[in-house]
Length: 205
Ligand code: C5P
Image (tube, rainbow, N blue to C red):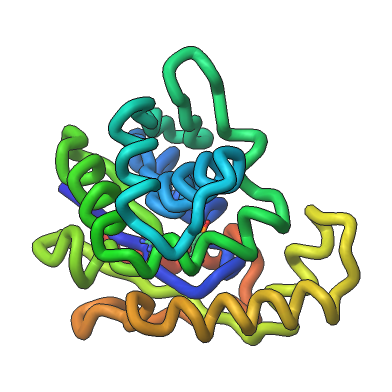
């Protein structure tokens, strides 16, 4: 069984996926963390983020591993844990460029498809490209302002700056962010976290 939860940036996908996964007693898989890891490592190595060959060589030489857990995902490169470094504004700004590279998308997709079921998968294209056969598909939306207000509670930046950065990322991510035709689209604006989780769990029972 695979449940996919896709959606726009900062729509609450990770928290919702974690809550749904815990209720189901299965891990959740955060695909965005792999794109973020590729971006972080590319930035640290001063690589051109538009050029796939250098990035793929780096990722091939020093493999990155996603550890899917119900409570939160962790990302490793050998013995080094990358998790805490993946949500900086620098990574936010570069990640859409890296995610637009087909070779990087193949690298991410291969890792995701190798994971043992069951799990909840969250990202942009889980229900469309990676797991089109998933048993249940959801897509989370909310206005950019509401998402920026939520994220401002996690980051030391003001709401207008976060909102502008989110809108820019939405635009850059448009290609891979369309909801699957068979996904239930949930506007999370009027709901709190538990409300979104409950909406999804109701559909699963
Ligand atoms: O989900 P999160 O916001 O952490 O994802 C970071 C970035 O990774 C997105 O802005 C997008 O560019 C990329 N991404 C993607 N496809 C996915 C998941 C994430 O292109 N399935």
